[in-house]
Image 1 (cartoon, one colour):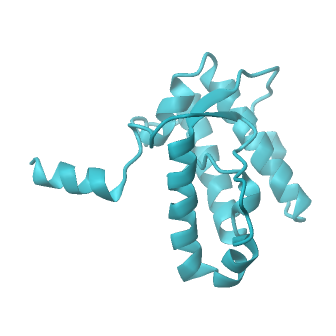
Image 2: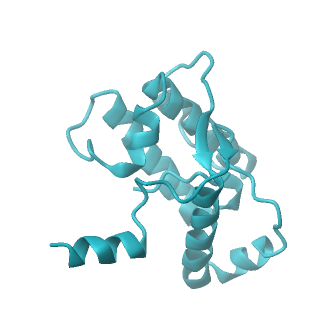
Length: 153
């Protein structure tokens, strides 16, 4: 599961569809509608928000908006209604880590899409997030954290 901090406009078609599916799964988890993925680290920032279900619904609405701009037909009725949601704080280090991670994925699966993104100099976050100074999030599973975990067993 990957719930990108990056704005969904950076995702290729495959990535956007995957994000929609994974965010819908997160929505189900946070609503208590499924027993799988309940401890997934990508859910931590949503669970820590004042209103987790409304936060993931807000997240999904922005993904839906991007999909609609591209002519996709994602079913908006799958998203819980929302009022207003406080932005979730995310670090600049997390945003930059995800940018590197996305570029590595696109290099393999969609190099033409990556070429379109190369001029990007000022990264935008998903509208739910407000970027603050700081390193990669503690909950993020990086190559370095995987190495440390496997060595510490």
